[in-house]
Each structure stands twice: as structure tokens, then as C-alpha cells.
Length: 152
Image (tube, rainbow, N blue to C red; front, top):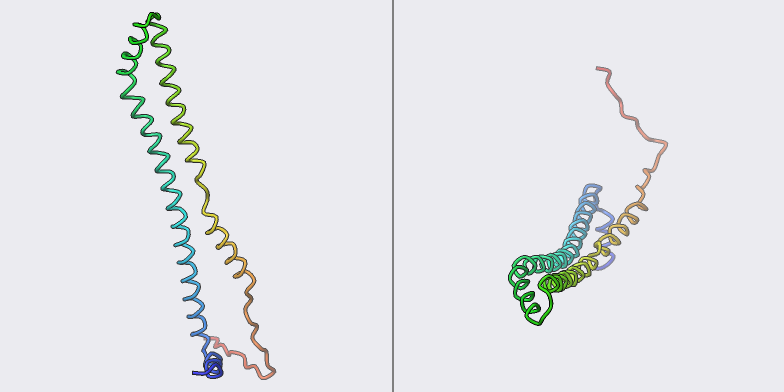
């Protein structure tokens, strides 16, 4: 088909066909926007999962290692000649330092989570485009016939 035939055929589309085409294109656009948002959010969920895993690992290490390692390290330091109370204090401070470092790692991972910027920009662009579309006015002719209404 030549370009002239396609233009002639396009000019003959009915209003229903035009509305159906616009509806289908708008539906496809909305589906694409949703797919983009899902892809961006999926990346952020992975980052949150990784940060949560770091916090979980920090908690597990803190809970299970504290009693055993605290006693072992404190008695090891005590065998070097320091008082038992000072030995336990040094070991407790070291464990708090390790927990603080793991928490900082988790906070850095959480700060990398961002809103879905591409989706937001695309939706704003689409909204701006749709907002500028105006309906075509119907031509008013002098021979316009009104619709008669029955009183019954």
C-alpha cells in the first residue's frame, strides 16, 4: 500500500475506531509505566534485603557470640595480669565496636535506596502531554437540527 492509500484509509476511520485506538494506546502506556515502576522498585527491594541481611547477621553474631567469647576473652585478658572486671569491660567494648561497624554498613546500604525516579519522570511527562490535549470542537452549521424531546 502506498502512503497516499494509507492516508486516505486513516482519514476514513470512524470515531469509534479512533477512540478504541486511543484507549488501546493509553492502556499500553499505563502498562509500560507500571512495568518500569516494578523494575525500579525491584532493585530497591534487593538493596533493602541486603541491608536487612547485614542487620540480621549483626544480631545473630551479637546474641550467640557474646556469652562464649566474652568469658573466653575476659579470662584470657585476666591471665595476662589485669583485673577480672577490667577484662570483661574491655571485651564488652570490643563487641560494641563490632556491632557499631556492622550497623554503619547497614545504614549505608539503606541510604542507597531511592524513589523510582525514571517512573516518576515518565509519569510527569505523560501527564503533561495528556494535559495539553484538547478535544476538537464540532463545527456548528446553520442547518443544525435540534433533537426533539417528547413530553411524555
